[in-house]
Amino acid sequence: GQRMYIDPSNYGDPMEALMSVAMEINKDDLKLEIIIGGGEFADVYRGVLTNEDKTQEKVAVKILKPGSSHKNREDFCVEASIMGQFDHPNVIALKGVITRTRPMMIITEFLENGSLDNFLKSNDGRLTTLQLVGIGRGVAAGMAYLSEMNFIHRDLAARNILVSDNLAAKVSDFGLSRELDDSPENEQSEYQTQGGKIPVRWTAPEAIRYRKFSSASDVWSYGILLWEIMSFGERPYWTWDNFQVMDRVEGGYRLPAPM
Image 1 (cartoon, helix red, strand yellow):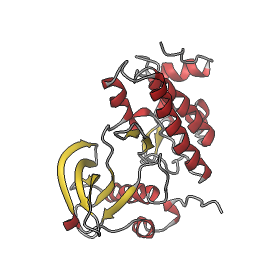
Image 2: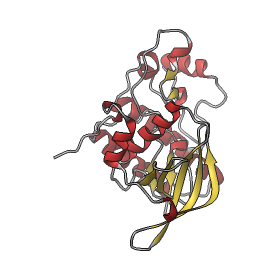
Image 3: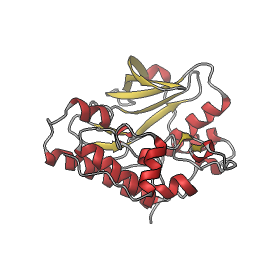
Image 4: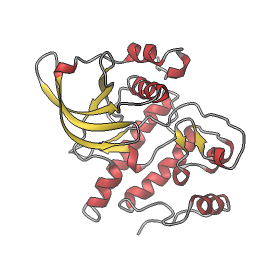
């Protein structure tokens, strides 16, 4: 009885997809504390959520910025309705959404140690091989679950893994994980997907060249992620530009074992 992932774009209206998988949270039950990150269309805060049984828990809150376009709002809904379908200890958990009032918010569990790339850099040389392998194992367990659900991530990298206070790794960031847009083959469209640019350093050659994304291309990205873990967050292929990376990898170059 394997549950399969349902692509939110199968629904005409992303809001409808969202309501089928996410719980609407009353904004009075949420207290925002400090801003911990952000991107082009949204800011991320740490907050406290009061549950129905009056217990409180720390949460991360992604807030859509004012003035966002209709497409940004749709993408926001899509990301939450992807996350809301998953239930695994190594995949970030959606707590709920606020859609009935503005601004719209996505509420997820909060992980003390933040993103894996920053965590590795700030603990350079301070984690044991066993701890590093444990982080890699957690990511593998989360990704195996996602691939069993027929879900392709497309943007697996240390920056998209979150780390808890007891070093549990959780796959997050489902922003790129959607249908690719096959635009005419000009030079730029090679890296353009609907979710933005393809992260070349982490992406399998066939996915860059022919847009063949699969669980196998996620495995390639996982290999690059393991290299990031064992090198404490070094940048894959160092200072090479994207064209050099593609050219050399297609020519057979592979990253050396981390020191």
